[in-house]
Length: 543
Image 1 (cartoon, rainbow, N blue to C red):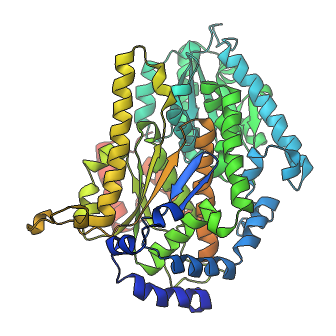
Image 2 (cartoon, rainbow, N blue to C red):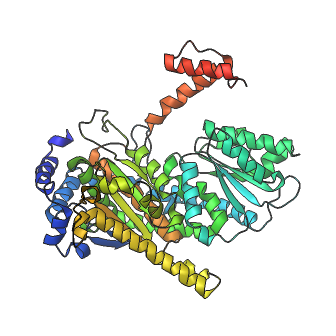
Image 3 (spheres, helix red, strand yellow):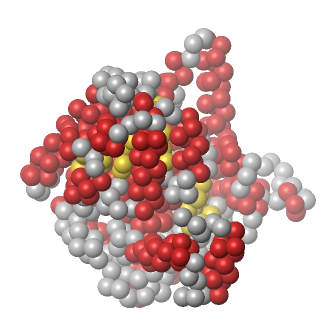
């Protein structure tokens, strides 16, 4: 068992020393750590100095990485070895953002990827040029992405984060909820004559997305489209299941493909990213890929001490397993990154929310922390109270762009000056909050005597700064977290690429839906029967 291995035992013993040290004392005894624990790569700077980690701690953590044969796992990831062993697949999302064929072990993969990107560019250029027409001959004005999970969160995050680069009048919208409430609201705002739907699903069998697609189809037909023209002029399909796209009715020329070695939550880099390409152009989408590739190369070839994803992951394992910290907060100080916490919640917790190792044996140590977050200024007025004075220790990632070149686009000097001030204000708050979390009352010249005003501090955090928020740096940032998540999994000896935990609920939902529609409730537990009976009385179970 991992907890009995030499590297783990050494870390556990070392942790008894570190747990007795406050970050204020660690900083006082090591004034050079701010500069020493700062790394840069791919347009991103990472500062790890506020971790409860001593110089010796890093050496013990590097020994853990070596013991777990992390270097071998990294090479297997990039070479397309069947590292997702429970599903019998490679996890080769990095191939989607390769910049040359030489980076891939299989030349045919490069050919296939480039062919799909070329196909996507043709569709994107046609839509952006106003040449894609709806069933009545009018140009498309709105594109709606129908997807859930990675087929929604990835492109939605990217379009939101890069909204300042959007250079088209075409509206981009996202529908993921299966309950229909948002669907009904959105359809009221759209014109069926000028709306195009992107049906994005790896399997093309996801119930949530199928329900929204069927509603969209019925909406088009109700407003005058023939079934044939609705399929032909108002749907693009993006999937690894070509047969299912054709079965649904999507025209062959409007089908985009990716492959089963691309996990859903890693699919932004594939043709799933078509809505981003529509928003900022295909060149912008390729810049996203190039930025992620820069982080890939840094991750693949850098020594542990210089490796940003590896050191982030080692800090997480240290906090989770040796300091007993259960939670991680993602705190972007830029409203354009508002969806980043939700995206990382899926990436990290769906990947590493595991309780058995790669051999299927139960674990006797903790794995994934609970991840949540919010835009920093909003979070300061919400859950920072818990961070500063609650009973839970939490590790935090503070994220912001260093510069805001987009501010110069403001229409007048006074507005530009005001926006520049707001950016400075956001960065000042980022630094202040992370400092207080670290030092507590030691940040004050005179500590408060009132216990209600006491700040304990000693909360570890990372600071992640982008040179600026553009397509390249966003790609690098997302890839940074992907690789961090992978490293954590390798250190914990778990498979980060399957998600069997969500499947059973889906299966039971099918049975439950049938019961709701037939009125049969006998086969369920008493709690479910009580709710089903209530639904039956309300008439909500009727087709």
